[in-house]
Length: 152
Image (tube, helix red, strand yellow):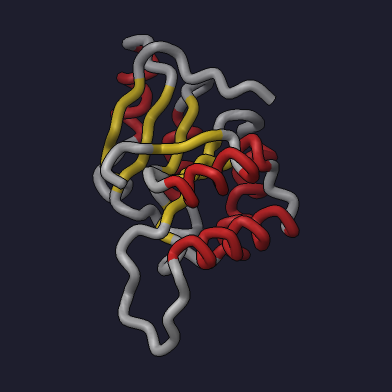
């Protein structure tokens, strides 16, 4: 599946983005809205914007793999794409690791997260990785549609 984002995109925080914002952006010719600030795994913020519009693509930028449960994200992805096929992109990344009793490398955590999404049927061509370093960029090339490099 080709990702059609158009020439313009907006970057909004998930907590503050409104349906009215998405409608105004769509009417102004924007092709995408990116939800920042680690959206919740239920993806309700993205769903709210998609429900209010007819063509704009909504992407997460980025879902924090330490906070957003991969199984819940996969379920949310399928729930939303049944109603809005081709209009949701999952941007995922290591973000800021929370205090955890067990250390896992960010690369290993992101790879494991991708394993879970893949096993749950989330297509790789709808996933982007927050990546700058060579190992994460290689993982993105091998397992995702591309990379997000803003604020990584």
